[in-house]
Length: 84
Image (cartoon, rainbow, N blue to C red; front, side):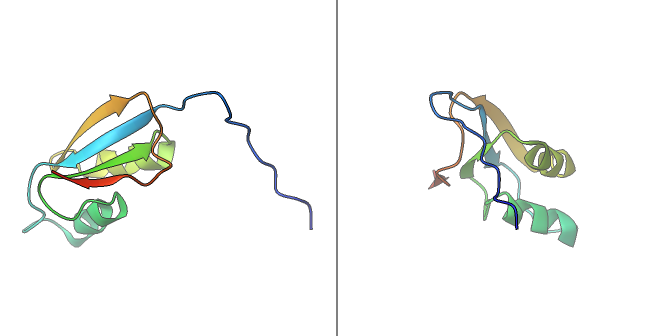
């Protein structure tokens, strides 16, 4: 097996996205509820900071009517789940 390549991100601050659920998932399609769970959102007012990657952007594009998104300067690799 070949060793896995690592990308060096030391010193550089990656952009991140702060995603907040603003509407309930009750009555929405099961796939939309699953997307909210995958984004780390479990109820109205729940906020999660995520890295700005294409797969995250794709999930956000599926549920724009249920969430609000803000771009942040820091990446979300720490898994910072917050409840307001």
